Length: 145
Image 1 (cartoon, one colour):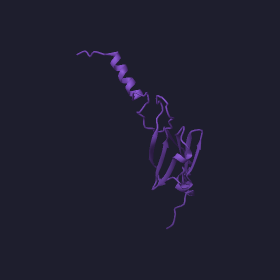
Image 2 (cartoon, rainbow, N blue to C red; image 1 turned 180 degrees about the vertical axis):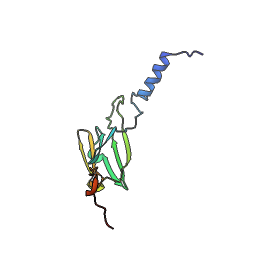
Image 3 (cartoon, rainbow, N blue to C red; image 1 turned 90 degrees about the vertical axis):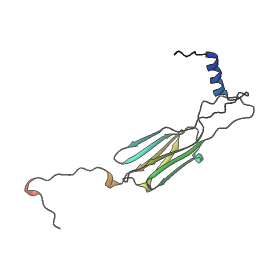
Image 4 (cartoon, rainbow, N blue to C red; image 1 turned 90 degrees about the horizontal axis):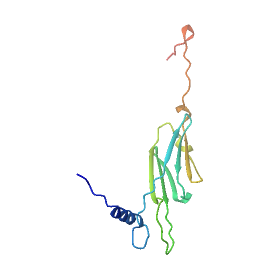
């Protein structure tokens, strides 16, 4: 079965989605969800979050029972008698990450610069890999209890 495509109806529906009302003001906003990279090496875990346009006061970082929670809000500011088409996302977001036992929660650090939030959590020294020497032959001693 073939479907009939009507360009005028499709365009009209797209304009309604974008413009939202007879006043030409967009009313549908997308929810803001920042992109986050999680990096890990032998010494630390690093979270790199893209949060352009978000002020430090609008961000909150909590760590409870090995659960890292990043919350924030990108606020929309409108002006009176302004027509606009929204292309950016606004609103509140929450991202949650479960951390491994190996991290040192007491030494968590966060830094916001140029729209990028960086959170660094060092790992305990005992969690870092170390090379174990293997003994061979008669020089090896048995541990006494």
